[in-house]
Image 1 (tube, rainbow, N blue to C red):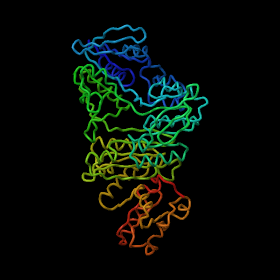
Image 2 (image 1 turned 60 degrees about the horizontal axis):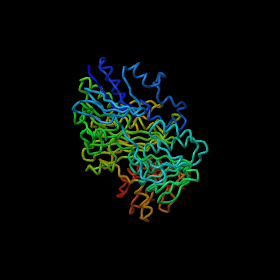
Image 3 (image 1 turned 120 degrees about the vertical axis):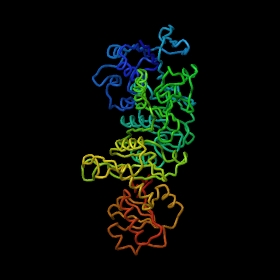
Image 4 (image 1 turned 180 degrees about the horizontal axis):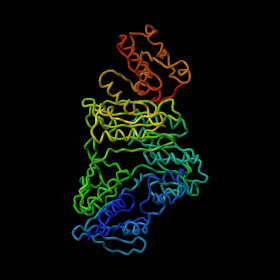
Amino acid sequence: MCRIVIIGGVAAGPKVAARARRLMPDAEITIIERGRLISYAGCGMPFYVGGQVKDFNQLFATSYGVIRDEHYFMNEKGVKVLTRTEAKAIDRQKKEVTIVNLDTGETGTIPYDKLVLATGSTPFVPPIPGLDLKGVHRLNHPDDARKIVEQLDGVNEAVIVGAGLIGMEAMEALLRRKIFVSVVELKEQILPGVLDPDLAAVLAFRLEEEGVEFHLGRKVMRLEGDEEGRVCRVVTDGGTLDAQMVIVAVGVRPNVELARAAGLTIGETGAIAVNEYLQTSDPDIYAVGDCVENLHLVSGRKVYIPLASTANRQGRVAGDNLAGRKSRFKGVLGTSVLKVSGWNVGRTGLGEQQARELGYDVLTALNATHDRTHYYPGHDNLLIKLVVDKKSRKLLGAQAIGGGDVIKRIDVVATALYFGASVDDLFDVDLGYAPPFNTPIDPVQHGANIARNKADGLARTISARELMEKLERGDDFVLLDVRTPEQYAYRHIEDERVMLVTLGDLRRRIEEIPRDKEIVTLCALGVRAYEAMRILTGAGFKDVKFLEGGLQAWPYELE
């Protein structure tokens, strides 16, 4: 009989146990968990804070309503779970784990044949004075979520420290509670680990239009409290913000202390090194989830990207290997998605700057479009960015934001990336179409066509940032708006260099366009602007570009 011991009982650990039990009916399986809660839905916590999840216990329940506690694991899985029990040391020679009961102080040892480390991660605690004030929270554990909800009464203003995934989800949750939210981020953009600066700027601009206040490139110096010891202010290097609640969300660090003390190899990212079978440097010890580093499938580099999806997939692979099935975990693409204030956000693969730093000759394509046919009720906008290696035309990554169905496009690109597809391959994929679901050519395939046109020299573009820099420098050029007068009147760039010529009139009025100046065409989404660029190019104009993504990708004020 094989004795399997799993250290960690949140996500990856229980998945290992469940898979191993199905494959090894006679194995003795024990989970050691230092907390009192196990197998909880950590990704559901922001939705509990926001009120979409009404019952706290739903974070621990199966789809059929049974609470996942020690009794559930023993009765349904045949797995013994020791909660409030901490693994203190691993003796690899004796193959046993030293444990201590955190409630009684009683110590003991548990022998193993195979050991699995699923020790997860710990929130990074920045050195900010005042973190111990009342009303200061993190959002990394169900107890955090419950405390936040219990203290929401009377909170009208809150500050989120950190604009990463957790910070933005916390922001969304508080917005749903009708709380005014300010977000402070050390870097110059929101979602720095998810979006490139161009898409991040668009998203931040749209969220600010909805009432969120961002303080980017700002460092929190200290938190200040009132006479009762409750937080009331956040002091940054750029000013002071009032706050009745503060949520600190500045990332996590892998829990590797137990592995390091046992002499296991720690990887270059600071997480536990594992092979494709998820074995550590000791072949009888596996590691899974947020405590391990992974291979990036595009860059070939080691990365630390802690995600629940990765943890669960690794749990199954490790369970297979414990049973001798030799399953491989090939690596990750860092595919991440979230929903924030009605905006869907996703990324997969490499970002533009990442790709450049790795030495790729980068070409990007930005497609502003609708997620379904424009005449079908309920369609919404998408902004999709593809990152491509110009020489090989190979896909490197994608990012997208919008109110429409962003996530299925990210999943399509993730699939293409896994199989090493080019932008030409992406266009050739036979995707489904009907007006309730899609456009005749899927938006991500339109993005591929933009990339192909740019690679072939048919499309010459300028980004929103580059255009704004030209405007601010006072460059002598023509900004040719090819929308209708009604669309122009609704919102437009106010500048003396703007010339309004509707696309349908362009051929008739082409002699009005100066041939001795640079021409930048623009429209709402970029499609008409591209058409105008091709018309002008065909008529002999030498220096014509179009605003990629149109005004949908414009993160600046309009008149």
